[in-house]
Each structure stands twice: as C-alpha cells, then as structure tokens.
Picture 1: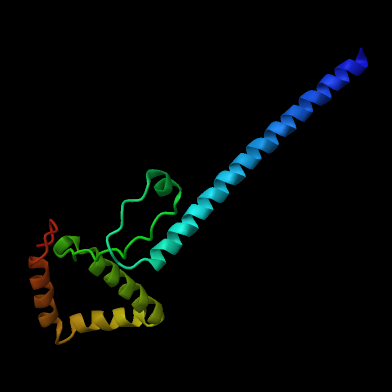
Picture 2: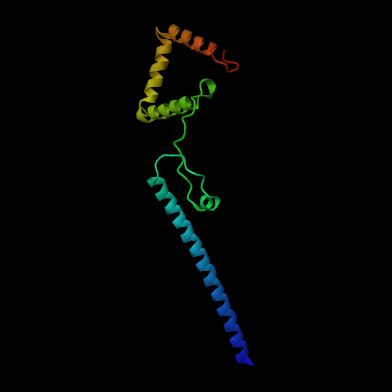
Length: 141
C-alpha cells in the first residue's frame, strides 16, 4: 500500500513538472515570436522607401516595440510673476555668489552700513524708497 502512494505522488510531481515545462515553452515561444516580429518591423522600416505604408495588423502592433518618440517641442516661455526659468537662474546665481564670496560677505555688509552713514546715504535711501514704492508687499510701501 505504501508503494502505491509513493507512485501516485511521483506521478503527480511528474505531471506538475511537465505542466511547468510546457508553460515555460509556450512563454518562450511567445517571446521569441515577439522578438522576431519586432526585428522584422525594424528591418522593413529601414528597407522601404518613404512612401505611405499600409496600416500594420493589430497583432503585429501589440507585439512590436513602441516607436521612438519625436523630440519634445519647446514650451513657450512664461513671463511675469510665473517666470520659473528666470527664478531658477536667479537662485542659482545667488547661490554661486555666496559660494564664491563666502568670506567677504561680512566685510561687504560693514561697507554698505558705512556707505549709508556717509555722504552717499541720502542717494541710497532715495533709491530704497523708490524700490519699495514698486513693491506689492503689504506694509513696505
């Protein structure tokens, strides 16, 4: 009786392994067919002249590799308060300035403070007031 059970178990294992092998073969054949179709479509694209072509079959279209996308079109430049490109450039330039002049910035601040107290102070304050009058920020103009 024990031998009969072993043989049934062996038979079921054999059936399972055969089923796995057959599904693996099917998937391999599907992949190879897809590759062959893709290669054939690439060859046909190269060899045919630039004339109107008939629409490809649906089955070939699904299995073929997607066509290369055309270069993206340039977007229109957004101007005004939404000019993101100019904002990125300004922030990048500002960060580069700080990196280059990191040790000199405290000295520059002291010189600017001295200039405000010196003979140029009235001109600098007038320029500051004019700049603030153009500002849309509340409480600064």
